[in-house]
Image (cartoon, rainbow, N blue to C red; front, side, top):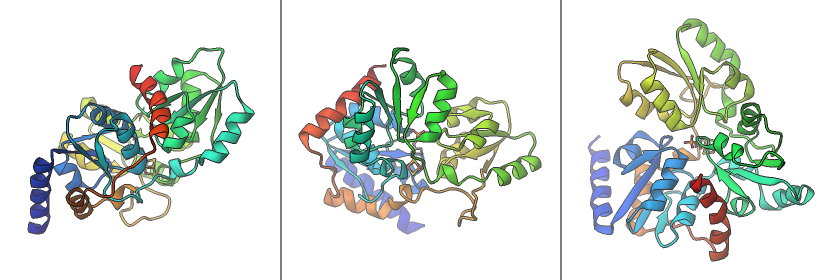
Length: 310
Ligand code: 13P
Ligand code: SF4
């Protein structure tokens, strides 16, 4: 609509005037992805944040992603359109309880999935994302036992992939646990030539039948390079925007959720808290801003830097 266009234009003008960069995750609403300078998966967004020359980073994603950007590039002003844009995985792992687990297993190497708070990152030896998790686990000496947090589904998948024993934190993503295996199989019955692609945060029974498992960028690359025509996509529905643009002639079907959601698919309510309007206001007012304590940033930087070096 005209309204949306003018808001997008105003954001562009503000962005130039303030030397700001807009980084967006694939789960953001299409209007936000369209005005972003860069759209990517968690790892790519972290790399962009670390390398940017802009004075302001507007992070169109969730809180832990904006925090990571701040930790990687602390001299920049990092803005998040809605500070309440959290993540069920990050929430599942409170620092106090995690410290207790660490105390029980003091000789374990702590690997944390980037979907956690800065406090949890500061307690970690190395961070990983869904695109480099296997590599990170394989970089740990074989004689070292591992604690993996907070996603038990990704953790279980990594145990299977790497053959490593790991102590798993009992966290999960509400969005990726919402897929229905029964409905998925029923759908597959109707599209037997479809390839099932899934994010590793999905439950074990979904991953078992998946033809490809990977990060959001990994899934996009798979669909682009595959000779197949039809895909059932088990991740947040926001990815379909970029995916359909990449492969306009292929058929993309969102994996069905257990309960009939409004969109009959899975949406991350946290990701969707950011709107174009909130993005505009936050850039204009330069608030809400991510503010972190110096020492916390320093301690959380170490395990992220270790990941980046790999
Ligand atoms: P990616 O790193 O694969 O983009 O995943 C981010 C995320 O939040 C998945 O739910
Ligand atoms: Fe967190 Fe899941 Fe939303 Fe990703 S999709 S931000 S893991 S709640």
